[in-house]
Amino acid sequence: MDRDTAVVYPVGYFAGYFGAGTDDQTRSIRRGWEPVCLTQGIDFEFWAAAHGSLSHDWSVPWTVGQVVQSLRNSVEGRDPWTAGIVPARADLYDIAANEAIARLLDYGLLALVGDSSEERTAFAKTHRFDPMLLGLGNTATRPDRSVIGLRDRPVMQMPESQIEFWQMSNQFDSIWDACECIAGAVTEGPYADAPPATLVPQVLSDIRAYIAHGAGYLDVVVRERHRPVPPS
Image 1 (tube, one colour):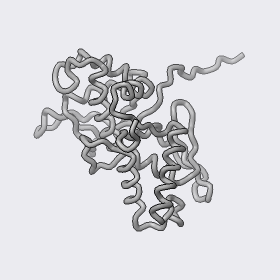
Image 2: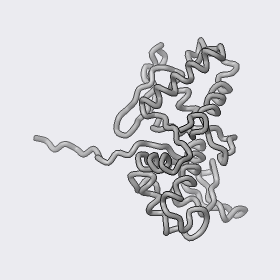
Image 3: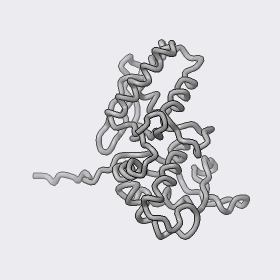
Image 4: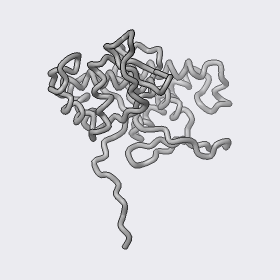
Protein backbone atom coordinates (compact mmCIF):
# COMPACT_ATOMS: atom_id res chain seq x y z
CA MET A 1 0.00 0.00 0.00
CA ASP A 2 1.24 3.48 -0.91
CA ARG A 3 0.65 5.64 2.16
CA ASP A 4 0.70 8.81 0.05
CA THR A 5 -2.33 7.71 -1.99
CA ALA A 6 -4.20 5.58 0.58
CA VAL A 7 -7.55 6.91 1.80
CA VAL A 8 -7.67 7.93 5.47
CA TYR A 9 -10.55 6.75 7.67
CA PRO A 10 -10.96 7.76 11.33
CA VAL A 11 -12.26 4.94 13.52
CA GLY A 12 -14.20 5.32 16.75
CA TYR A 13 -16.61 7.69 18.45
CA PHE A 14 -15.57 10.69 20.55
CA ALA A 15 -16.80 10.08 24.11
CA GLY A 16 -15.64 13.30 25.77
CA TYR A 17 -12.91 14.96 27.79
CA PHE A 18 -11.49 14.00 31.15
CA GLY A 19 -9.51 16.27 33.44
CA ALA A 20 -10.83 19.42 31.75
CA GLY A 21 -8.90 22.52 32.70
CA THR A 22 -5.78 20.61 33.69
CA ASP A 23 -2.52 20.07 31.88
CA ASP A 24 -3.20 16.34 31.55
CA GLN A 25 -6.56 16.64 29.80
CA THR A 26 -7.44 13.31 28.18
CA ARG A 27 -9.73 12.67 25.21
CA SER A 28 -11.61 9.39 25.17
CA ILE A 29 -12.46 7.65 21.89
CA ARG A 30 -14.74 4.61 22.06
CA ARG A 31 -13.52 1.82 19.78
CA GLY A 32 -15.65 -1.28 19.89
CA TRP A 33 -16.55 -1.81 23.54
CA GLU A 34 -13.37 -0.23 24.89
CA PRO A 35 -12.29 3.41 25.37
CA VAL A 36 -8.96 4.57 23.97
CA CYS A 37 -7.53 7.52 25.89
CA LEU A 38 -5.51 10.10 23.96
CA THR A 39 -3.24 12.18 26.16
CA GLN A 40 -1.30 13.97 23.42
CA GLY A 41 -3.09 16.90 21.82
CA ILE A 42 -1.80 16.31 18.30
CA ASP A 43 -3.16 12.74 18.32
CA PHE A 44 -6.69 13.99 18.90
CA GLU A 45 -6.28 16.90 16.48
CA PHE A 46 -5.13 14.55 13.73
CA TRP A 47 -7.94 12.07 14.47
CA ALA A 48 -10.47 14.93 14.30
CA ALA A 49 -8.94 16.34 11.10
CA ALA A 50 -9.09 12.87 9.53
CA HIS A 51 -12.88 13.16 9.51
CA GLY A 52 -12.58 15.55 6.58
CA SER A 53 -13.57 18.99 5.41
CA LEU A 54 -17.05 20.02 4.29
CA SER A 55 -15.49 21.89 1.38
CA HIS A 56 -13.62 18.83 0.09
CA ASP A 57 -14.60 17.28 -3.24
CA TRP A 58 -15.32 13.70 -2.14
CA SER A 59 -14.70 12.34 -5.60
CA VAL A 60 -11.05 13.01 -4.71
CA PRO A 61 -9.51 10.63 -2.11
CA TRP A 62 -8.85 12.06 1.37
CA THR A 63 -5.18 11.22 1.94
CA VAL A 64 -2.62 11.64 4.73
CA GLY A 65 -1.16 14.67 2.95
CA GLN A 66 -4.55 16.37 2.81
CA VAL A 67 -5.23 15.64 6.49
CA VAL A 68 -1.84 17.08 7.46
CA GLN A 69 -2.53 20.21 5.41
CA SER A 70 -6.01 20.53 6.89
CA LEU A 71 -4.60 20.29 10.40
CA ARG A 72 -1.89 22.80 9.56
CA ASN A 73 -4.56 25.22 8.31
CA SER A 74 -6.73 24.68 11.39
CA VAL A 75 -3.98 25.75 13.80
CA GLU A 76 -2.79 28.66 11.67
CA GLY A 77 -3.04 31.86 13.66
CA ARG A 78 -2.98 30.06 17.00
CA ASP A 79 0.07 29.62 19.19
CA PRO A 80 0.70 25.87 18.81
CA TRP A 81 3.12 25.81 21.73
CA THR A 82 0.53 27.33 24.07
CA ALA A 83 -2.26 25.17 22.67
CA GLY A 84 -0.09 22.07 23.11
CA ILE A 85 -1.10 20.80 19.71
CA VAL A 86 1.73 20.95 17.18
CA PRO A 87 5.20 22.50 16.92
CA ALA A 88 5.41 25.82 15.12
CA ARG A 89 8.35 24.92 12.86
CA ALA A 90 7.27 23.11 9.70
CA ASP A 91 9.97 20.43 9.93
CA LEU A 92 9.10 19.64 13.55
CA TYR A 93 5.42 19.74 12.65
CA ASP A 94 5.82 17.07 9.98
CA ILE A 95 7.75 14.85 12.39
CA ALA A 96 5.06 15.28 15.06
CA ALA A 97 2.28 14.54 12.54
CA ASN A 98 3.99 11.35 11.37
CA GLU A 99 4.45 10.23 14.97
CA ALA A 100 0.76 10.90 15.64
CA ILE A 101 -0.23 8.86 12.58
CA ALA A 102 1.88 5.93 13.79
CA ARG A 103 0.29 6.05 17.25
CA LEU A 104 -3.27 6.29 15.88
CA LEU A 105 -2.67 3.35 13.55
CA ASP A 106 -1.32 1.38 16.51
CA TYR A 107 -4.37 2.29 18.61
CA GLY A 108 -6.69 1.24 15.78
CA LEU A 109 -8.21 4.74 15.61
CA LEU A 110 -7.00 5.36 12.07
CA ALA A 111 -7.14 3.20 8.97
CA LEU A 112 -5.34 3.65 5.66
CA VAL A 113 -7.00 1.84 2.77
CA GLY A 114 -5.30 1.39 -0.58
CA ASP A 115 -7.08 1.15 -3.92
CA SER A 116 -6.76 -2.62 -4.36
CA SER A 117 -9.85 -4.79 -4.14
CA GLU A 118 -8.17 -6.94 -1.47
CA GLU A 119 -7.50 -3.99 0.85
CA ARG A 120 -10.98 -2.55 0.45
CA THR A 121 -12.62 -5.92 1.06
CA ALA A 122 -10.49 -6.60 4.15
CA PHE A 123 -11.42 -3.19 5.55
CA ALA A 124 -15.12 -3.69 4.79
CA LYS A 125 -15.11 -7.06 6.58
CA THR A 126 -13.42 -5.74 9.74
CA HIS A 127 -15.24 -2.42 10.15
CA ARG A 128 -18.84 -1.30 10.53
CA PHE A 129 -20.60 2.00 9.89
CA ASP A 130 -23.06 3.47 12.36
CA PRO A 131 -25.30 6.23 10.93
CA MET A 132 -26.20 9.33 12.90
CA LEU A 133 -28.68 12.19 12.36
CA LEU A 134 -32.06 11.68 10.68
CA GLY A 135 -33.36 10.95 7.21
CA LEU A 136 -35.52 13.95 6.28
CA GLY A 137 -36.83 12.68 2.95
CA ASN A 138 -36.49 14.43 -0.38
CA THR A 139 -37.26 18.01 -1.35
CA ALA A 140 -39.66 19.58 -3.83
CA THR A 141 -36.76 20.99 -5.83
CA ARG A 142 -34.70 17.75 -5.82
CA PRO A 143 -37.06 14.78 -5.51
CA ASP A 144 -34.23 12.51 -6.65
CA ARG A 145 -32.12 13.28 -3.56
CA SER A 146 -32.57 12.42 0.11
CA VAL A 147 -31.73 14.91 2.85
CA ILE A 148 -29.86 13.92 6.02
CA GLY A 149 -29.69 16.14 9.10
CA LEU A 150 -31.74 17.32 12.05
CA ARG A 151 -35.14 18.98 12.10
CA ASP A 152 -34.84 22.35 10.32
CA ARG A 153 -31.13 21.73 9.92
CA PRO A 154 -30.26 19.66 6.85
CA VAL A 155 -26.55 18.91 6.57
CA MET A 156 -26.18 16.94 3.33
CA GLN A 157 -28.01 15.40 0.40
CA MET A 158 -27.45 12.03 -1.24
CA PRO A 159 -28.97 10.53 -4.39
CA GLU A 160 -31.99 8.34 -3.61
CA SER A 161 -30.20 5.44 -5.27
CA GLN A 162 -27.31 5.65 -2.76
CA ILE A 163 -29.14 6.24 0.51
CA GLU A 164 -29.87 2.56 1.21
CA PHE A 165 -26.50 1.89 2.84
CA TRP A 166 -26.85 4.82 5.26
CA GLN A 167 -30.36 3.68 6.18
CA MET A 168 -29.51 0.01 6.68
CA SER A 169 -25.89 -0.13 7.83
CA ASN A 170 -26.53 -0.29 11.58
CA GLN A 171 -28.47 -3.52 11.10
CA PHE A 172 -25.32 -5.37 10.07
CA ASP A 173 -22.10 -6.39 11.81
CA SER A 174 -19.86 -5.08 9.03
CA ILE A 175 -19.77 -2.92 5.93
CA TRP A 176 -19.32 -6.09 3.91
CA ASP A 177 -22.44 -7.68 5.39
CA ALA A 178 -24.44 -4.56 4.51
CA CYS A 179 -23.09 -4.65 0.95
CA GLU A 180 -24.10 -8.30 0.62
CA CYS A 181 -27.66 -7.38 1.57
CA ILE A 182 -27.80 -4.40 -0.77
CA ALA A 183 -26.37 -6.38 -3.68
CA GLY A 184 -29.24 -7.48 -5.88
CA ALA A 185 -31.84 -5.62 -3.81
CA VAL A 186 -31.27 -2.22 -5.42
CA THR A 187 -32.54 -1.77 -8.96
CA GLU A 188 -31.10 1.61 -9.96
CA GLY A 189 -28.09 3.85 -9.37
CA PRO A 190 -24.48 2.82 -8.65
CA TYR A 191 -25.62 0.15 -6.16
CA ALA A 192 -27.85 -1.63 -8.68
CA ASP A 193 -27.27 -5.30 -9.54
CA ALA A 194 -23.69 -5.27 -8.29
CA PRO A 195 -21.88 -7.99 -6.32
CA PRO A 196 -20.56 -6.96 -2.88
CA ALA A 197 -16.95 -6.58 -4.02
CA THR A 198 -18.07 -4.17 -6.74
CA LEU A 199 -20.24 -2.19 -4.32
CA VAL A 200 -17.51 -1.65 -1.73
CA PRO A 201 -15.56 1.16 -3.51
CA GLN A 202 -18.72 3.27 -3.98
CA VAL A 203 -19.88 2.57 -0.42
CA LEU A 204 -16.49 3.53 1.05
CA SER A 205 -16.55 6.75 -0.98
CA ASP A 206 -20.03 7.52 0.35
CA ILE A 207 -18.87 6.76 3.91
CA ARG A 208 -16.14 9.38 3.60
CA ALA A 209 -18.78 12.02 2.80
CA TYR A 210 -21.04 10.84 5.64
CA ILE A 211 -18.20 11.06 8.16
CA ALA A 212 -17.22 14.58 7.06
CA HIS A 213 -20.81 15.78 7.55
CA GLY A 214 -21.23 14.10 10.93
CA ALA A 215 -23.80 11.68 9.50
CA GLY A 216 -22.10 8.60 10.92
CA TYR A 217 -18.90 7.07 12.20
CA LEU A 218 -16.77 3.99 11.66
CA ASP A 219 -16.13 1.34 14.27
CA VAL A 220 -14.49 -2.06 14.39
CA VAL A 221 -16.51 -5.23 14.02
CA VAL A 222 -17.37 -6.73 17.41
CA ARG A 223 -18.92 -10.14 16.95
CA GLU A 224 -19.31 -10.84 20.67
CA ARG A 225 -21.88 -8.59 22.30
CA HIS A 226 -21.68 -7.72 26.00
CA ARG A 227 -24.36 -9.50 27.99
CA PRO A 228 -25.40 -8.91 31.60
CA VAL A 229 -23.79 -11.33 34.03
CA PRO A 230 -26.52 -13.10 36.03
CA PRO A 231 -26.21 -12.84 39.81
CA SER A 232 -24.56 -15.82 41.47
